[in-house]
Image (cartoon, rainbow, N blue to C red; front, side, top):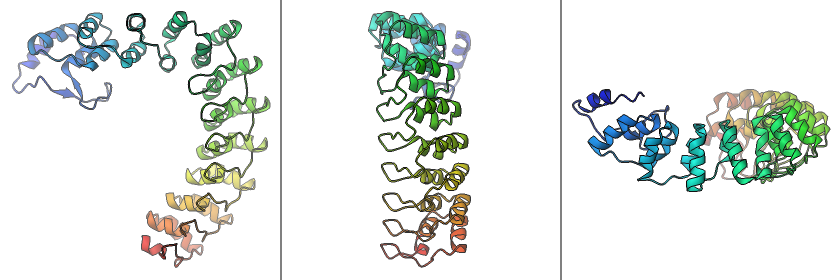
Length: 377
């Protein structure tokens, strides 16, 4: 949007012009109400158009006007908005996103707004990150965040200046979690060589190996395991790394975990095994590997449901066929007495229903309410 005041004047003089009109577009920050003309001026830094709307229509300076001014980068608009509105954390967010270090410093020094370090790495704003370090001298917090910039020299700077190698961020994750989550091999090796805790857990009980596993990072997983990572570590909800790779169909990482002693039938807090996860998320390859390595085909959750129940609920035809061909009990009942056929009927999974029936499913099986599958169709 050019700062074309003449074009805007002509637009406002058209018949039917609504000074309160709002624009909704994916090109702009989300707003339930849409974006006003004045907010658009703030977003684009269009000072002449901004002044015209304020003078001609007394357009309201909203909180979003101020926020968007930090994206638009026009200090005149920002100062006008500050006469009416007070900056909030969204203002700092947009200043970081726009990489406007003057605005970032202004908010920090004049309004005591904190720099969000997570936003700094998400938007690759190293300069704002360094301003935070300079202003706070919080070396440990900055160290935990630093791997996300993937700069070995930055990481080594913090280590050489006494950063706690196992320092934790707000949610309990360490620099090693960051390296594992981002697939940064060199960073990972530097941290390990300097004594990083391989099995450190965040607030949810996730270790670096969990972070690598869910993303299918084979090499990162191998490095962690070779350096003593607990391959069967459980999160607070009972997930092992094997549960996670099974759900995401990460074949190679799954094979690494199994070959290094992962419990094939480990159960989470709800009694689900990795095979339950493979069946639930339609992960064909990991399902087959788990079965070939001795996974319990009829393992039950706390509610009594088997992997075949989950495949039937979601209408996964091929998964159902694989489970049945490998000995899944076709008439298994959960705690409500539902068989896989009950669920296939309830969720209108025609192909899965046909597979179950053709393989001997009891069409007259009754649940605890006395209902047969047909009554759910």
